Structures are given as C-alpha cells and as structure tokens.
Length: 265
Ligand code: NAP
Ligand code: GCO
Image (cartoon, rainbow, N blue to C red):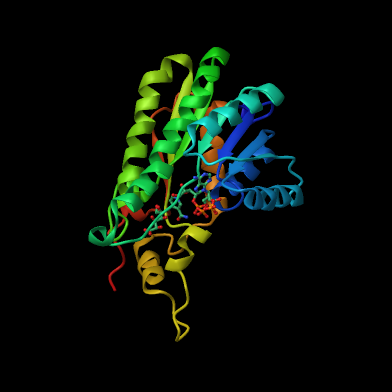
C-alpha cells in the first residue's frame, strides 16, 4: 500500500473554531502531515491566542476573525483564502457550542442559537467551499458530530437536535457531491476533555469526582475520558486520499460508549 495516501502535503485545510480544543488538535495533526492550516475564531483575542499556540508548535497558521454563522463573513474568508493561499481542499466544521438547559426552561432564542452555530454554520461553510472543490476535482468535508447525533440526554435538546441534523447534512453532502470526488464524513467524538466538557468533570467540594464524570467512566469500555489527541488519527484518515471511497460515514471515536450497556454499579 502507498503510505503517502495518508499525507496532507500541498493540501489547504480550514478548521473552524480552532484556537484550542478539538479543532486545535486536528489542525496540529494536519500540519504534522504537511497541510497548510487556516483557522478562524469568533474574536481577535481568541485568534491571537490560537496563533500563539500554533507558533509554539512551530505551525505557521493563518487565522481569521469570523463568526461561522455569518454567511457574508464566511464567504469573505473563503474568497481571501483562495486569493492569498489557494483553494481549500479540506474543511473541518468544528466550531460549536452547547447550552445545557432543561428543555422547558430553554427559550426559543437559546435553542435557535445552538442550531445556528452547530447546524446552520456547517451548511454555510460547506456551501462556501464546495464550488471550488468541484472545479478542482476533489475535496474533503469533515463535520464534527457527537454521540448526541445518536443519543439524547437531559438538558441538551438543542445540541442533540443540531448534531442529529449535522449527521444527516453529512449524508446529504455525500449524496449531492460524491460524483465530484468530494467526500463528506463526520467524526463523532465521545466525551473528550476540553473546555466544553469541563463543567461535567469538576471536582466536588469533598474532592470526589463529578457524578457525571463517574457516569461516563462507567459507560466507557476504555474507562476514561477521551483526549483531543485520540481524534487526530481518525481526522487525518478522513482528510487524506486513504479515505477517498469513504463517504457519508460518521466515525465514532468514543472509546466504545455507543457499543456498551455500561458497567454494573
Ligand atoms: P470548545 O472547547 O468549546 O471549542 C469550540 C470552539 O468553537 C471555540 O474556539 C469557540 O470559540 C468556537 N466557536 C463557537 N462559536 C463560534 C462561532 N459562531 N464562530 C466561530 N467559532 C466559534 O469545544 P470542543 O470541546 O473543542 O468541541 C469542538 C467541537 O467538537 C464542537 O462542535 C463540539 O460540539 C464537538 N464535540 C465535542 C465533544 C467533547 O466532548 N468536547 C464531544 C463531541 C463533539 P469561543 O471560545 O468563543 O466559544
Ligand atoms: C454533554 C456533553 C456531550 C459532549 C459530546 C458527546 O453535555 O452531554 O457536552 O454533548 O460534548 O457531544 O459526544
């Protein structure tokens, strides 16, 4: 087998919301595999924080202030990248938010905000990069889904609805653009140690582990939370030529949670 199939040399990758967290880890792995990194975040402070973090890793990334829900700003980012760097070969729709609120206490505005960032924005970003991918004759779109693309739980109704929709948007982009050699797949991370899940892992006043932390450990065959590094290999695979015949698939990187009934207490 030609191991160069996993190389990202001469590829331009745009990872949204990648100043830190899962997006940063994916961008770092892509840079290690030879890709040119483009990222955005919602404000200049975060972009500068990200640029510093990339620089410390020896990565010359291009950072943009861009709210992914703003179609005009997204189109301007893509136009600038195409003019100054080149056509985007790989898009990772990573930017996302969660609001943990019981459904009957959640306002329609709060629900809409989560849907806007976690579902509408991946549509906007994919729509912005697909035309040039079609002209170039290839492209990779990777949507960061979630276990909540498959399962629900209390307080995350908006997030689960968005991530369930993102799974189906992934399958639809596959269906509509596969003939142009564009592959669109999802990654469904399990419970990963990032700022987004920090509230679920906070130590209790008595020093014990958070009940939810203990719950996840009991539900995971690997008996641990995931680390952002656990997502790097799968993300490289889905961005590389090695996955050219993988399309419309959600690759769950969850330590086995979705396969496991859970350890008896
Ligand atoms: P995170 O630590 O909260 O990072 C999310 C990033 O997206 C932040 O930089 C955030 O900026 C940015 N962002 C939010 N709204 C944005 C917008 N409108 N425009 C541009 N950037 C925006 O999250 P994470 O844990 O790394 O998660 C990254 C992705 O993985 C998300 O889609 C999340 O749903 C998904 N995921 C996470 C887990 C997990 O266990 N952590 C598991 C499954 C899926 P701000 O700092 O300004 O908010
Ligand atoms: C939650 C968590 C999860 C993770 C992830 C699981 O509150 O249940 O935040 O939603 O972020 O999406 O795959």
